Length: 420
Image (cartoon, rainbow, N blue to C red; front, side):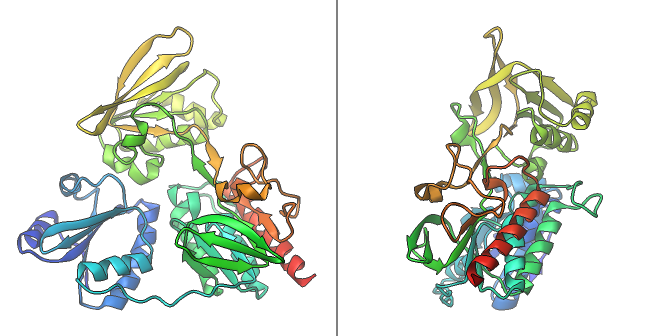
């Protein structure tokens, strides 16, 4: 297997020659893409020269990106005998990618060693809180498992520049995420890609049940699943996620180069992503319900002064406009007059808040009505052996640094709990 960086013309020639290969559509600024690149390097070592891997920078090859209708990156396209066999959008972990490549080559999927079922500590969530907890736990000698349903790093990998991490004036989010992940893995943390469905109690053991059918047990569990972005819940939105509706400007900005986009929201995320998009989009319209914005004052000043950005207060979305199965605009309604207006846009970015990703723990009765975990100062819940950490907890400030703080406290509390 060779990792190739061909031109668009060379890729078309490979298609014409009926070759079998994998295309990785990526961008240098994309956090999940960087994570996927590490996976591809491992795959190359495993598969040798059995299949070629083609890497295409979406910024360098916009025509081929549009030709293959790649709207989310990383975008993995499986080409067999010159034809598109299947595709996958988003981060794909090594085991699942290896299995897909084996199927592409017409072979049986590789047999994976069955993971252990019992641990001292299971951490649900591989963001800053979960990974920090794993570092502290492993340093104390605990057999630790991290379960994550996406790429390691959580929202860090969607952050282009982090400017409030102590000791660094600015750091790329995906780089920081990979550094924390590498540190955790070097210490011997087990890391599996699983979707957790629920947690049950069996005496002093806590059983974590996954969508794959696997069940893992441990006397202690840390829930560090963070939050998920809220939807606008207007007609047309659900069908257009990935086709013009995006929740990550850092991930998808390049698809809207020289095109108008809309951001819905008035907090830090909305205003900061608007500033980021000015390097790509032709114009950015921010739709806000009120004329009082929640973003930090310094960020507001930058937004209001930028020539590419227009802020529309007292408007709310009522419908996503669709043309040829892609977003073409947003219908908005004035909250004061009731007037309706259609805005033209190729991309819409909702930034209207987030909800805790704790649905799998609802039967434990350890969360408030909004779904946030209710934790004590030591991050424990009312159920012995179950702890919370990070943005999924009921807390005042949700930042990377506070998530790492929570993870450290939770792990130390687990260590004391197990020793006692």
